[in-house]
Length: 312
Figure 1: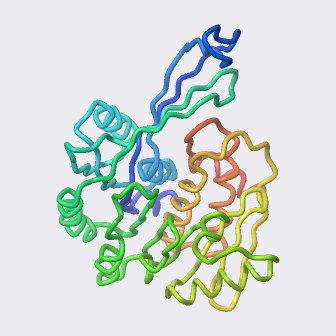
Figure 2 (figure 1 turned 135 degrees about the vertical axis):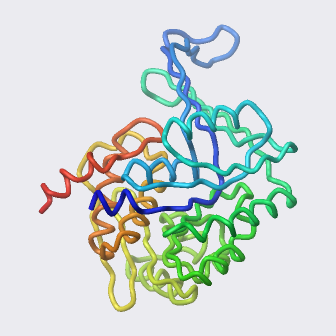
Figure 3 (figure 1 turned 180 degrees about the vertical axis):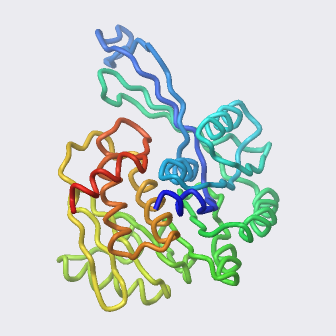
């Protein structure tokens, strides 16, 4: 399996961001306002959004190329350094009119105290340039992942999916928004419960949810629809059957980036020819590891493999 993973080439397209973490101690309340004072001791920078998907792909042992849009700013420079340090090949289109999406989290005593977001929508000219680059890259990719965080990089995802389909490549989408028709024709999409409800409406029973999820799968012409359900695990909808995997029994510390891990795991496993049931077992195990870590994290193949063996 390791050898097959090392040969797999994954193209990741979507919204990237720089995740910043400021860690410190909280020992007193500000005299200026009733808020805690966090004395910062250290800082970390990590790849977020689609960049974290690519980071997970590499952690599983495959090769990742990342295509997205960033601003002409220091955040883009720092994100580029993080990508290179993680072994991620990148094709970042620069839009001088925007700021690179950045999420700054301030953490005191291992608890998130505040998050500050910086973001803008890319211009259409830069998005068109990204599409041209995409056409050149898909020819060399085995699998394509679209990571949609609703920041604007995938405004034309329907056109991009159509291009991939002409080459017969597998397409995996982590969706956003309430109009999933844009993802029609993908191999699989991976919404969480909240995202699914935004797309199909609420439900009053598990059976009704199952019916709505299957109806959506059929409407979009998907091979599979994977719903991640937090502490309830995940449920995979295929033609004629549903596979439910309960959540891994471990302490949940931080769910940030768990969806990135799931779609990366699913894509690399299907990309090397693993069946759906084993692929979601791998994805579920990897997600269980990630939520036990602080912040936007990854699970490596070396971490996941022993747990798969233990589970039989």
